[in-house]
Structures are given as C-alpha cells and as structure tokens.
Length: 343
Image (cartoon, rainbow, N blue to C red; front, side, top):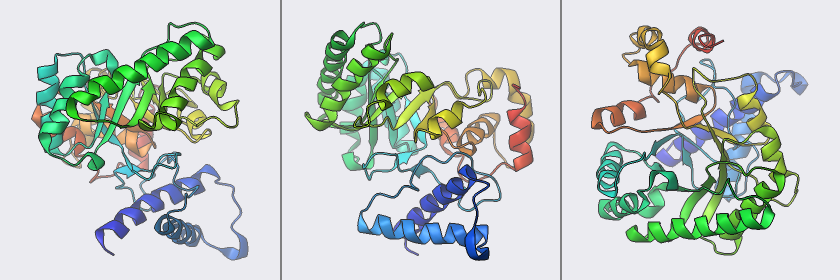
C-alpha cells in the first residue's frame, strides 16, 4: 500500500471497528466473522472514498479497544461533506498577546500540529494568523477553527445578529494572515434558550452556505437538548464537533454516547488541567510500561475513548509530548482502571 492508501485503510478500519461496537448485538449473517465483517466494511468504505462518495462509516468512533484494528489513527473525517481530515490533536491558543500567539503557533507548527483552535476569547487571532502566513506551510495542510461568543444575546434575531457580527470579526482578524476561509467555526457557548440557539445557528449556516467562508460548523458546551434545538430542523447543518471538558476527572455516563448518537465528535477543551494534580502518580506508573509520561497516558485515554482534544503549552518539549501519543495503546484493563479513578 502507498502512504495514502495506508492512511485511508487506518481511518476506515477504526471507523468500521467502531461501527461494530455501536451494535454489539448485530447479527452477522451466513456465519460471517467479526473480522470478515470489518474487512467487508473497509472494502466498501475505501471504494467510496476513492470515488469521492460520502461514507456513513466515516463517523466519530465511540471506543477504540486494544484488540481492534488500526488503533494508531491520528485524524478522522467528520460528519460533513468536507473531505479534509480532522486531526485528533489540536493546539488551542490561550489568553496572551499577539506576539506570544505568533511565537507559540510557529513552535506548534514546527513540532507538527496541523489542527488549531483559535478562540475569539483568547484575543490573539491576528497573531495566530500572522504566524500561519510566516510559516510558509500550505493553507490546505492546516485545519483552522475560529469561535463566536454570542451566548448572552436573547431571542432568535438578537442571537443571529450577534453571531453574524462574530463571524465577520473572525474573518477580519484572520485576514492579518491572508486567511480568507476557515475550516471550522464554533459557538463558544449555547444561547440562553432554544430560539436563541437557532438564531446563533442561522448565522453559522449563512457563513457556510452564503458567505462560503467556512466548511464545518461546531459547538461547545452543548447538552443533548441544546443540540436538539438545532437538529429539530431536519434541514439544518449538523454540528460536527461538540467541545466539552471531557477528561479523566470529568466523564459522566453518557457524555460520549449522546454526541455519537447524533454523529458528533467530542473534543476535550480541558484534557489535563485537573487530571495531572489529582491522578498524576497513577498515570505515571502506567506510562512507565510504554516509556510515556503521565500527560501522554491521560491524552491517550481520551483518544482511545473515541474523542479528540485541544491542548495548550508554552514549552516546545510539552508540545512534542502531547502530540506523541499515537504510537502506543493502553490495554482494556488499563482503560478500565483509569475510567474508574473518578467514578
């Protein structure tokens, strides 16, 4: 297999294995084994990819068990028709000035990050955009997400107007780096009620279909009912990602399932901040077996549960560390042990 086919195979195998996990009671006709079923799904999905057709298997995986095929996947395709893969590891800029954002973005790019979460809340989108331009890395190799803060606008029209303003402000800031289109725009928080949420989403829909300045739409901190405020409209564009504080210290029952049921990928926005002080020694003990740090074990647990993460650092060493989690697999027993820590 060439590199492209290997990447497609790994991606589809993970999605196919997850599809089978979604239905453990699924009947395999004619005595077909689980491995044969996965192979069949891989064949059909790879053919669909090659033809450019969308495949229902290319959805966020729920759980990746140690015994399944292709556990080294570093990116997934989202539920949209966007063919650009979404890297599971993202660098999320924090609150600091544009010069710091510029420097840290260049460091992240040098280390190998290709997914960037540039929130309007951080106040440094211009510094980030200038770094992207200065790096010389082709724009199509990067996945860039901006955000809109409009959760205090009450009512459909007010929320629409505030969100529309936020979309335009994102593009004005990104223009500092000649970025004229985003891969994703995300609501930082849901509006105060269903009508407000629908107003927020109307602005996002226009940014995608009318302005054509973004491909994927996403949300953050949305509950099932808040997601359904959007999805009640069968013609609505489905959110691709729901960013949540999912981690070893916060993983209430059903948090992944309610998103996966709606074909939405969870991205952790606080993967380690409360984990390392509380469970660092346990994670470090498990990590010794693999030559990995406590942080790497904590991030690997997130990925093996079928989620993604956005992390931040001011150290090149930590940037490298957080990205270097795709060459080992925690055992099922280790996953269970870690999941029980906050039970």
